[in-house]
Image (cartoon, rainbow, N blue to C red):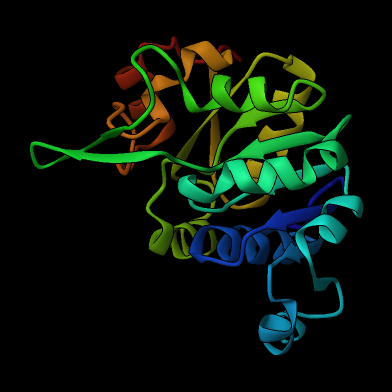
Length: 219
């Protein structure tokens, strides 16, 4: 994987498969990553093995270290987390990778009220942060291998109301070995939520654009 052109100090809150994989991909691209965990001591040895640019701390301490924070915790715990550290996220870009899942008639679906996207819900909870939706629709067990072994091929959807923040996160998506596809604003991001047209599915950039109805880029 190529080194990033803009090394950043990132925080990843959550040490499950999504958070760990995203953090590893960013470390491989040259970023510094602090992982946030309720029990940092339990993960200290594994994180230390990732190199000198990796660290682990309590969620609040991790959030303080970075201007960009990835929330990669289960949907059922994210409200408790944001109640605890929301003030520390003010002024920061928050990448929301959490999902509120329901299993309905043999299919995964969003557990949120109709018409409400995960991105918009998080933006309401964190009004002083700039919320970007990404890293949420890729199966967690495949985020690392597809991003590292097949870098630059598979598409990842990104949604944000703030274009500058969307561009920064798109850069981080590329650094992770994925191809960003900007779906639009947070209200336009249902496709990457549970039950959406790209949730837990893989597409090239052209295929994803076809699926979500976004014209191909020019130039």
